[in-house]
Length: 251
Image (cartoon, rainbow, N blue to C red):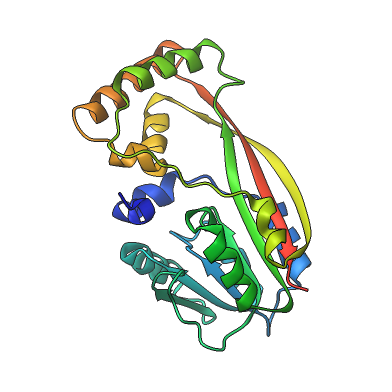
């Protein structure tokens, strides 16, 4: 199964529940890459645009490449008032950018879908000399703050979570230095989210690729089991987020 367009099925739900990034992250990227008017920026797979607007507001020449047709329509409506917003509906892996070069290429939890031997060299070639690559994502710890609730939810997974295809995409971001990039540095920020039972089920159903593809009767049984577990634990679950950022540049 090709999971790459899974979220495109549910753009409104995805946009509502996808965790947001922090202002500090955008500030660091914009300063690192010196982005502003006259600079060119490429976003790989913006989805519904959780990371898009801070870059548009700099006045840069912004281009997004997005595989999902519904996501393209969604972001056109969301950012259509920005004259510097441009988006193309295509596959980054095969799209021909011609002679165009960028001062910044960035990925908000998307580049891990691309094999590193394809993604890293292509980004390197798309960047101007001295141009920057920013890769960021949110890692969520659902265990530390929830005690026995975490164990109860794992029991629901064991009993009801049976998917046809496992999600196996992963990327070692440190490997970027093997493709000519330099000045790799990492930084992160901590945030906490608190959901009730219904919110947590909606979050899982709208942002986790395997949960979206879960078939009946497993889907209903799983959702009901998770909902009951959270309700019995006081109708409250705490998610501890780490917003992680990798910055590097082309010499």
